[in-house]
Image (cartoon, rainbow, N blue to C red; front, side):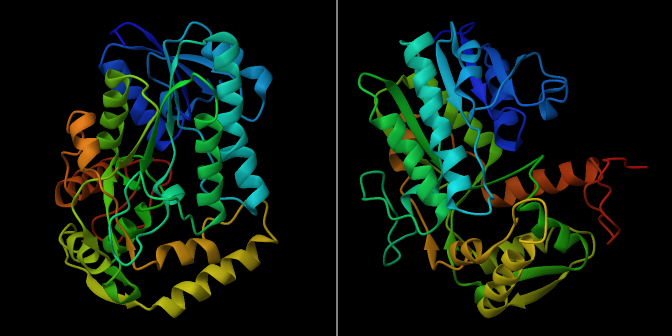
Length: 341
C-alpha cells in the first residue's frame, strides 16, 4: 500500500468505522465509504471521504464501492439482532458479498476484515486464546462473526487479513458508554462479583491496527486486537470511579441479576420495533470468567498499535463525553443532542 491509494470502507458511518476512516485519511489514503443513507452519513458528515450509497446485504451495490480500490476494510456488521438468522444476514453474508465484489471488480485488492474476539470465544481455563486455537464462540453473534471470517478464508487466492477486536471503547461509543453514564450519576457498577477478566482496546488503537494491517499486506493472517493489559470488572469500576469530580459508590451487580435482566430484555424486545440491545446471550457473554487473548504477535506484526492503557483511554473517553454533552459530571441528564449549553 502507498499513501494516496484508494481504500474502500464499509461501516464508516458507525463508531469503529468512523475512527478507521479518520485514521486512513490522516495517513494519506483516499477513502470511499459505503453508506445506507448517503444523505446522512453519520460521523463521516464532515470527513473528506467519498460517500457511495449501498448496503453490504445488497451485493449489487458493492461493485461501485470496491472498483479501483487497493484495499477494502470491512467494518460493517450487526452487534444486536433478534435471532441468529439476522446476525448471519449481516455478519456472514456481508463479508461474502464483499469478497464476491472484490473478485469481480478489484481482484488484486487486500481485504481487511474487522471481525470480533467473539468469533474466537472466551478463554479456556483462564488461558489467553491465540489465533491458532480452534474457535469456540458462545453466542449467535460470535458464530456469525466466525462465519464471516470463513467466507473470507475460503476464497482462493484472496489477499486478506482478519482482525478480532476485543471490547472497543472510546469517543462516539454508545454501549460501554453506559458504564461512564452510571459513574457520572453517582455509582460505578461492579459486575458479577468483579472477578471476570477482560482485555479492552481504545478505538484509536484499533484503527492503528488496521493501518498496520494495510502496511503489512494481505498474508492470510488472523490477529487479535486488544491492549495486553488484563482488567477485572472490579478494576474497571474502580477506574471509572476516579473520573467524576464527585467519587461515585461502587455498587455490586450480581450475576443472577445480570442474567435476569438479559432474559427480561429479550422478552420485552418481542413487543418492540428494534433488536434488543441486551439479551440472555449478551448476559452469557458478559459473565464468562475470562475474555483474554494473545496479542504478542499483533504488536510485532502491526507496528505496536496498542499504546493506550485503560486509565488513559478511560480519561480521554470521559473528557470527550463531557465535551459533547453525552454525560454530566454532576449527575445531570444525558443531552442526546450533544448540546452542552
